[in-house]
Image (spheres, one colour):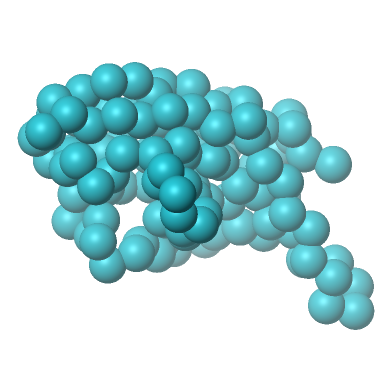
Length: 120
């Protein structure tokens, strides 16, 4: 089991920046994959960025070059630095921890979400 607590959301003007944080209840180095998802009003949840133990990262095309995911293993925390924000980045951002078990079992854990609103 992993408990996740996000922080750092808020209201920002287009072109501005925000940094989201996600504190995990266990050593994140032991978690197979961590990431950020977002859900815009009336839409499904979308994968934004992921980071694995080696530090390798992956981003959805719409945020490449603007968002950066990072981790601090000593603090059991991952971050999402969001720059050059656009109105379409508005949504609830969720931290995710994914663990792979035996027989292909996948366990996903979620934070409560943090609201990001970008005004145009």
